[in-house]
Image 1: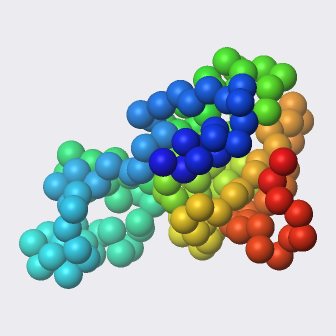
Image 2: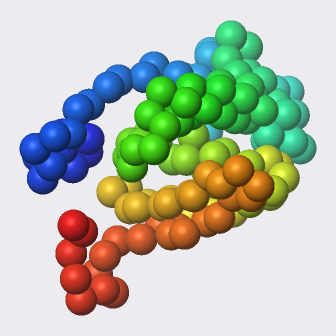
Length: 147
C-alpha cells in the first residue's frame, strides 16, 4: 500500500514486488504473542532473550539470516537500477538490518534503531562508504513536501 501511495505522485514510477524484502520469518512463533511464546516455548524464549540476533525459531530465520537475505536482494535491486533514484518499501526488521549494516552497527543492536510506520529512512550507498541521510523521518518538521 505504501508503494502505491508513493507511486501515485510519480507518473514514471514502476512498482516491483520482491519477496526477499519481507519481514523476518518467525517459524513456529509466527502469529503468536510473546506471552504465548514464553508459555509454549520456554527454553527457546530464554535463548531468544539471551541473543535475539542469533536465535532462530524452529522453521524460522535469525536476524543474521534476515540481514543476509535483505542485503542480497537490495544489492540486486541496486545493480538492476544503476544511475536511478529508487525507493524501497519494506518492513521494520529489514529496514533496521539494512541501516545497521550500512553504518557498521552490530546486528545485536539493530532493535535500537527506531523505524515508525510510514517513516522515511535514506541510505546513500557509495562506492567507498555508505551514508545515512535520513532516519525515521516523517516530514512534519520540514516546511516543504516531498518532490
